[in-house]
Every structure is written in C-alpha cells, then in structure tokens.
Length: 58
Image 1 (tube, rainbow, N blue to C red):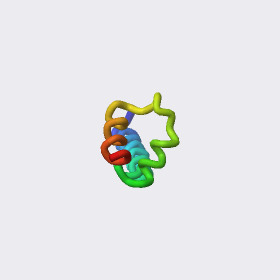
Image 2: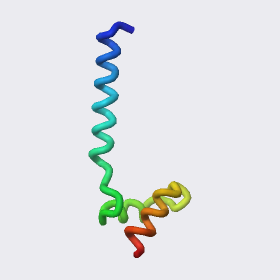
Image 3: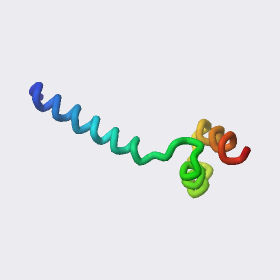
Image 4: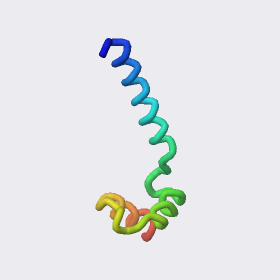
C-alpha cells in the first residue's frame, strides 16, 4: 500500500466511526432507555445493564 492509500483508508475509517457515534443516543437519555428496552436483555453488556438500572429504573 502506498502512503496515499493508507491515508485514504484511515480517513474513510475515521468518517465511518464518527458517523456511528453520532447516531448513538447519550447513555441515560430517554431515547437510550427506550432503545435498551427494545433490545433483548441477553444482548446487554454488564455496563449497559448497570447504566440502565442507574438511569432508567431509579
């Protein structure tokens, strides 16, 4: 890979990562709580379960 191709690949990857993070609601927000309620509980991580209990139940 040339330096130009590496730079282009890095730029595309950065744009993709930024586009994903912009779509995720803030943890603890009403939208986040609603989306977590729609997900199967078995798919939650331990951190997500803790955040859900802290922000959405209490």
